[in-house]
Amino acid sequence: MTSKFRAIAANETLSGAILLLAALAAIVWANSPWQQAYHDLSDFTFGPEALHLNLSMASWAADGLLALFFFVVGVELKHELTVGSLSKPKEAAVPVFAAIGGMIVPAVLFAVLVVALGDPGALHGWAIPTATDIAFAVGVLALFGKGLPKALRLFLLTLAVVDDLLAIIVIAVFYTSDLSFLLLGASLAVVAVFAFVVRSRHAHWWILIPLALVAWGLMHASGVHATIAGVLLGLTVPSRVIFGEKHPRTKRFEHAVSPISSGIALPIFAFFAAGVTVSGSGSLGEVLSQPVFIAVFFGLVVGKVVGVLAATSLVVKFTPLRLPDAIGVRDLLPVGFLCGIGFTVALLVAELSYPDTEHTAAAKLAILIGSVAAAILGAVMLRWDARKARHQDMNQDGMTDVNVELM
Image 1: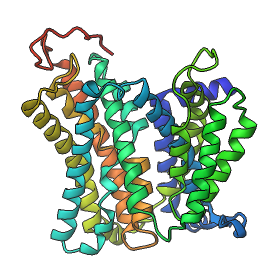
Image 2 (image 1 turned 180 degrees about the vertical axis):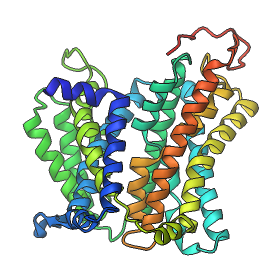
Image 3 (image 1 turned 90 degrees about the horizontal axis):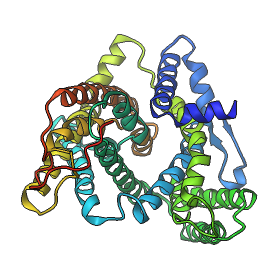
């Protein structure tokens, strides 16, 4: 059963489907005659008050379980930064600039729309449409990208990883309140101990897990969002083979934790984060007409693709940098739409931006509808791109493409 669960969780398409089903189940329940039971479950609190951990089920999902997801992100970042696609600046430069453009344009578009539509008080949610859900984006590419170069998957992964890194920085800088430097310092000290142990010969799970829990708890109590602890812990894992081991520990840790993250943590978080009650035609119409809904939706569906394409086109045109072999600018149209699948991180930022306010339902509904629309548009454009004839020099670097292996 364990091996079957791991196989399902490792399958990008299936794990994305589980995530979507969890969100759909939450929406259906939250708009059914038993909606109060859903909200009672979300609001049910437990945990030690003395440790500032008497949290609701929804908070445990967002602050606790989601830390596992961010730990995996941290491990992936460490691997990519040291031995992966981000370790070679020349190859990583274009997707890095694409990720930056894919965050700036949606944020600006969001700000312009909420102000123009008469709701400047909603500006605090500017970061909501800047996030990309790696699991969903890569899952759609795997399902509909047949016949396109494999290099496109690496480009999307690099872009999404940088996007997540920038989102982590945004959460740490702009969504931290009532900061306790003492507790933050204590958390960082425990992270340092974790870093020492995880690089030692005797990096046993029964030592690492308690250290990780303490670092997480102190980070949560400090006022910094607890998921940052997950990222920092992931970044400490060594990415090169040590002590004669067969595989780097980043790969071993990712293999161990990723199924739990994608198969359990993310679906549970989606279940508690996506349950927006909009039952009744009047209330639904009111939510759909809110400036926040319009701004988030167009930020994801339009802002992302415009940002990715514009940044890439400018970099390729005005600098010596070029896209990887076999990838042309036209391939970035579906990639831009896939980056508009915000979902997991976007839902987290929405909760941080609008805790218990009138904007929460509109923001979350826009994320769900916008992410589905971006996924559909991305899938259609992937099939369109795959049917078009490809040239020998797609990246226009003056040399015949050599890395043309197709998915």
